[in-house]
Length: 266
Image (cartoon, rainbow, N blue to C red; front, top):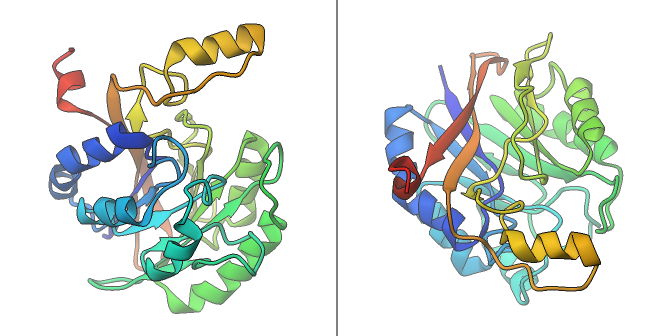
């Protein structure tokens, strides 16, 4: 039975480092066939570079998805077209560079992957995620054995609604962006695995990956501050999804892996 691992938003150097340290071990011990990771916060918590994308792939990730910080790093729009295992959100304007979806071949199955951005409380301009997801699902289903859809969105309602719309059409609908794992992982009635948010791969002694004090003070007085990436209590978080020969999910399980310092209680 094939098994895929989807990892939540990789935050800065700590998030990249734990992949380097622990991902190959997890792939082997948990018998993971494919690893997909959201990399939109890999570069100091805002965006990603081509070099970082290639490093993350070298650590054992098979494909990288992105989100609303896709263009935060200068020069990345010129790089993304050359990264054949990286896809941008599909519901950005059609003129934007980069792939709208990926098909990961090899082994015993073909896995389709794409991301859509939610529109509630999101600053980046995008088209309707529901219409775009419908379009891509219809296009990809005949070409793949399993289909993973990521919705990168602020509101839980938007993510849950997407999962219900695609129940029975996608193998899994996973939520990202809010960096906080939810407790609602489940298999919907028609065989789609769903979770509102898988959490982040990064430092948890933080506010969503950033140092606590400047974020806290910004909430208190409203003054601008630099939000640097935190460094402590680093975890790799995501979900493991099993599916059958029809592409229906049979299980979804939260994954939480500490770095070696966290494991030792340091």
